[in-house]
Every structure is written in structure tokens, then in C-alpha cells.
Image 1 (tube, rainbow, N blue to C red):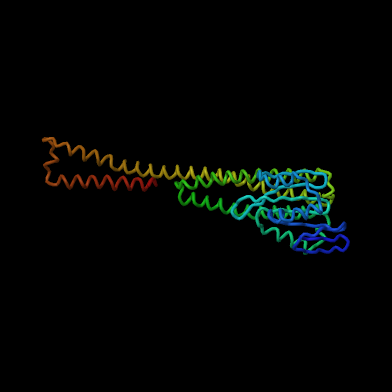
Image 2: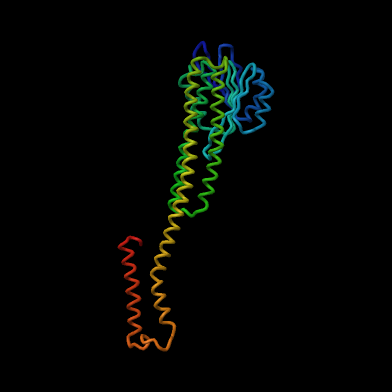
Length: 311
């Protein structure tokens, strides 16, 4: 918990819950269990709408914003190292911001460090909200780079073994995940637009400019997901093309082998008919002459293919 004094421009960090005074602004960061344990103490400071507790228990996996008379409730999602979405709930009032995290995320330390290095960033709850969301989108951009690396690995696997069936399964999984990620980010962008458009006492004019910058950052995330979808489609086309090229190479080899053996098969068939009136069968060196002809046909055909670069 961070407690900022507007009068003294000082920041105080406390482990337990402390009710702020009139000239103080507080940021309370907790996980779900901690929030449930301190809910009664928070009620002494601010009367949260009962719907908030209901939403916290619901887990409908969609970003949302709810407006109440004394505060607003926001639900955002952050990417985790295992590329899973983690829910982050924010309750914003005139003199407080409560953040409730589903998982332990490293970017919360960055948010806290930002406030400790420059306490004036907590002079308004709108600025606290901006810095939280700014670190959230930076966290997502970091893991977007990780997703790009995973897609490049799939692309390399296609070149190494285009016939591997697991590649198609991985592409299908990533396309579904990216579709979900993109939908969440689009909803979050709309939430930020609602915050900008709304006449809220929690967002002053200066913070509004920062929120506009946030929309640009979220747009970068959406553009990245769109690029990933196109890249995955391209990998599917690449795999199909490599498979076709490989099959064409196999068919080409089989065709060339067939061309070599067609005249050989013809000659062997002719002299294997065992008619009595076949002079060549009685030649002293007929067998060796036939082998010479066969080897000449084979080597001549191969040399011809090599010169034409067919093989």
C-alpha cells in the first residue's frame, strides 16, 4: 500500500491497510485473498457497490468498465509467461485506487518503483490509473515479442520438416489464442475511450492526454496481433507450398527413373519371348552385347537429364 500526501508531496509505504486522510491519496495493491481479508477495512473507508463483489466472483473473462456514483470498476487482462491471460481488477475513486491481481506479475514492481522515484505521479488517481495501464501494455508488448519468437520457431520447423502434422496443430492453437488476445485488447481500447469521453472526477485534463497515448500503445498491440495472424496464414501457405514442391520432386524422380527403365524393359521383354527363330539368341556374344546396349541407354539417358538440369 502506498500513501501519498498532497500537502507534503511525500510518499509512505505501509504493509497493512491504513485509511487515508482528506489530503492523502492511496494505492492499494492486493491479490484476491488479500482483498477478501481486508474487504471489511476497505468498507470503512469507502462503500463499494455490491455488484463489484459479484463481478469479482464471476470470472466471465471479458474486459469491462462499470460506472458507480462514488467510483468506477475496470477489468483488464495481462499476458503471462505461459501466454495465458491474467485478470486485473481496478477500483478507482477520487482519493484511492485498488488493484486486485489474479496472478503475481513483475510489472507491479515497476509501477511501485515509478511512484517511489517520483511521488508526484500519485497526485491524482487518474495518473495512478494511467501508470498502471501503461506498465500493463508494456508487459503485453514484451510478451508479444516472445510470441513473435514462437511463430518464427514454427516457421523454421516448416522448413526443416514440412510434413510434420504437429505444425498444423500448433498453428491452429496460436490462431485461436491470438484471436482471443486481440478481442480482449480491442475491448480494453474501448474502455479507455470511455474513460476519456466520460466526465469523471478521477481523470483530469492532463491525465486525459496520457490516456490518449495509451490508446496508441494498445493499437500497437492490436496491429501486432493482426500481423501474427497474417504470418500464421503465410506459414500455412508456405507449408502447403513446400509439401507440393517435395511431392513434385518425388514425382519427378519417379518419372525420370521410369523413363530410364522403359526402353530397358522393352528390350528385355523382346528377348524374353523365347521364339525359336530369334537369331540374336544364338549369337556367341549376344548376352554381352545386350548388356552393353542397356548400359549405354542408362548412361546416355542420365547424361541427357544432367545436361538439361532435370536431375
